[in-house]
Image (tube, rainbow, N blue to C red; front, side):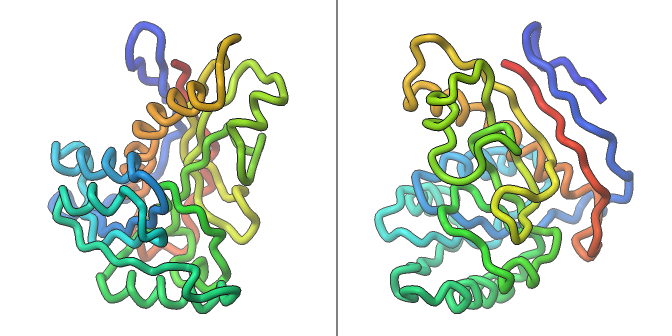
Length: 231
């Protein structure tokens, strides 16, 4: 499926099964964020504008100084601080607390919107095939940290961002959607990252909308190959 966004941009996405939630039944989301929360805001604004049939049940953040808290308060979303430093090296115990919190808010799908922690089996098994992550590269290229810097250092001409389902191997789950972003000759990590983020805000919303194409109770969603748009 190819959709023209403007004269220079295209969204190319595979078709998904048409088994959908009832139109009046919003997808119940839990958002995990560590930083400024720009992707959180993109999701919240899409919901407010009725462009996304979802409801943010809870925002979990792990950095007491994270600016995402202010964004959560702006949209009147319940916000819970779970500081990973309080758990020291007990990653699974940290994720157990996350799962407990998400379940207490009746969350169906989890969105890692700038979440700077690696999920353990505890979290993944609690929400099998129902955790979405956004990563600032065209996976499978440049997984892991400092993806933008590594793309620049590698001399690539095109990079971008990817929304994918979370699996036990870092940044390796099935791809839902991708955006391709040209690398300019005078780009710095900051300028390139800023352009990538603008595309992140679009595809994170699109990927969540696609998640509603199958019921959250589904244990094995269809294999989804990646789409992308070039801007």
